[in-house]
Image 1 (cartoon, rainbow, N blue to C red):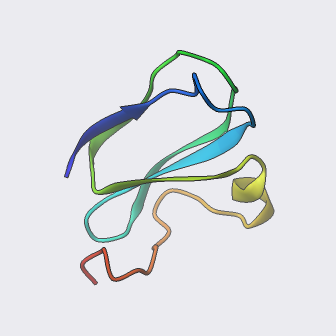
Image 2 (cartoon, rainbow, N blue to C red):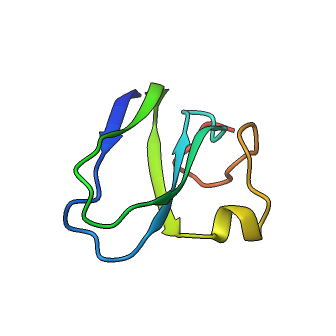
Length: 76
């Protein structure tokens, strides 16, 4: 786990960004990151993974901090 940050400099479509801890718990969400932006989007805490999905999917699937991601990469 580490503090992580991303930017959208070489990304051509808007994305929703999901920051996930070692247990698969969503700690932070950033919706509709702006394409080509060099603004840092930071995790604000130590995370295991950052998941990028198409913009709007967080709202469409009602994803929120505290939700659980199930995948072998995370301790369950």
